[in-house]
Image 1: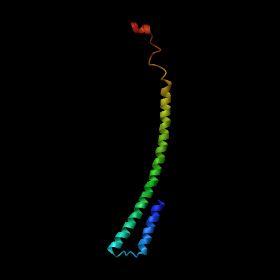
Image 2: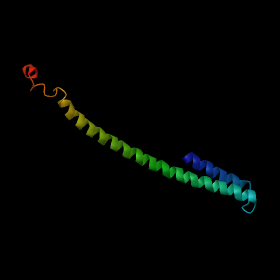
Image 3: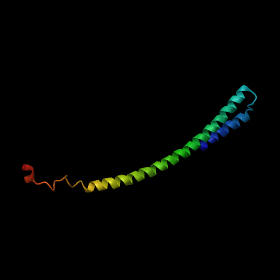
Length: 96
């Protein structure tokens, strides 16, 4: 982001150095474009901070979800060794 601000400052200095007049049509246009670039840079910087916050929040959510999955599947794994009702049914009972 610093590079963007440096480039905008360079453009402002360049505009002042070549004596861009705010009164002329071209001068208004160039200075307006530089102002818009400055506003866009500020918005991009704010969005960048927001994205960092969202990434951090998603990391926490992912960790929490992993804990929940581990708890659920660990519980489920305890019962994988048992076939449904195999212990209770004998072959003799099936012949009737």
